Length: 484
Image (cartoon, rainbow, N blue to C red; front, top):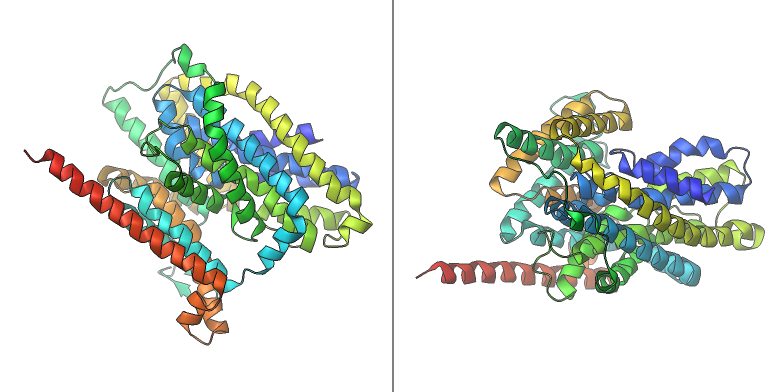
């Protein structure tokens, strides 16, 4: 069951719009009649496989298969365009397995302590964590820090469209389909996939050639030296992914962006991040989003609180089999808790084996005729966008965001910063408003009322200041070099 779950998870992750949650939802009815521990093992296999599967289209065609793979596009697709798809796919696979193992080890050893850490996070702490995540927007603008900030603010604005937590609609202009705001799938698919299709379509009319058949080096997987080089970053990002996975609602998307930024900040020689030159830039987000699987299981098993949408599906599966998760599960249903520990280890081993087989076939996707490849991508993108809510308006939104993303590319605004602002914006706003209610409107108590939120805000301010200063210094240095 774990083997089949991982296989279906990888397939689901590869298809744009079918993330881990959707893949688990589709297979959930088939668990009816299974023993509870077998059903959970099957779902855990899907969970682990889908988190890796999303990196395959992210690396090969610049389209993230899952929300968490959006960060992998930055360097994974650039590496593929430089003729090294095997290295990109192999890096995402190996780092994903390392991250998954780190998350599982943390689940086994630190289940109860980490659950207590999650309980220490209130609205103020979640708001501060979102602000810290938003400081990464600066680094996503490349050499121009302020372009990253502008693109991120645009993403935060997009997140305000629709009904807020008090029931008031904003920026809907009377359009009912916007009452619930923009869904992440149309935004992400438009800004990444449709934008890339439009860009390559223009190249077709211009007579430019797309990457065709790769040389022998393009098929090569990472060697031992490269694996050793990515391992420290993978372990570092795995710890970050595990910690963020424990926090209910944070999710794999947040962890991948934070891990990418922190790896760029703390490790040496990271100036080539974003150019498809450094495998560590792929290893960091992939390790983090795979580590979330173990971290998100901590509050589910220990407290009965799902740490993500995917673990919410698992909670439903447990309830379907008359199992109540929580502190008593280790006594009443130990086969569920300890079975989950073993299942995640086996799932990561199967993911490595199946991934190595899958890579040998997957890289050939980019050797197809470019018109056929672009037509297939756009068909998958529109199908994925429609499948989320079964609304035709989502297809038009995807196309609209594709045009917006194409314009952003033209003027040098990073779409990744927009997606990050869109993801973290609601977390920041909703928790800020809850914290203000608790503190009777005192912003000081929100940001500096607890030691945890104070530390996160200080880290955010220092990070923002250093990044802006670094960007200003680089710009000044380039001007001095250009001057005669």
